Image (cartoon, rainbow, N blue to C red; front, top):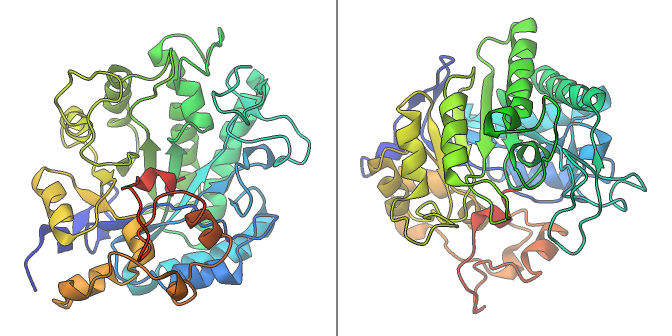
Length: 384
């Protein structure tokens, strides 16, 4: 077996040690029941991928009824979901992997049909750019405060369910990002304004989540945060905004920062003259204050080791873990030649790729199926 850096342990700020530096990121598998309860197919999908990685992040779970973004989505919005979440945590924690529950609210990135007739919400009454986007209701100050508490209660449920941590999903244009974005946040109260004011919602969720962790005495409970570095909207989030945000996040009670990108080695989406890699600009801004998770088009051990050599602390392997559930075990056993990089659709059940996940994977989103001519795609499609 080669002596890869990604096979070495990593100690997080709260004292927890990850057994290696490979992360399964949150991916949209759409296998929960209609009401958000964990399903047997979902447990099987997770079980087929558990045991090897240092950290396993769940598919996203909403924190309240208005947070639902798609069918088949998990929920952590009520105590009745704790038993199912406990089964999920137990499966994901096998082999001393750290099980993380990702939590979010979709905000305006949903529809009234998904919300069973209720209007989507956001920072301001500004619709998104996609055809299906509807005019959202601007959350009142009281509703903002309640949403912050909803995140804290989801943290409480994750602790009670036995998860090792939560990841606050502030990426992929969902509600937390909507508060940070000048496109979706036009507020004039304490929750809007300049870039520092637009951080307030995310920082309040982090603060209240940490308070809940302390309240329950879960000293080694992991608290992570995920962000998207840029938007293409005008106005929208630009890398300078994100670097200021990262500088503030680095001093919060967090245990890691997870940067959501389709390609780890992506440069600026908005500045064609920028030659620096976005992930390395963020790493430099962190200055070692938080471990950094990089994601996007990482497939081979060489891909991951390149990220390690650049100073990225943890590597999240998304789509490749759908194709090869035993990726790290094969590396550890010196069986790199046996790693699968494409999959026969006939092997879907063996891999736990049940409908509607298979329907999602065959709906035009690039995926490495055998005998299919497809362009390279981005993990961000799956990393909801």
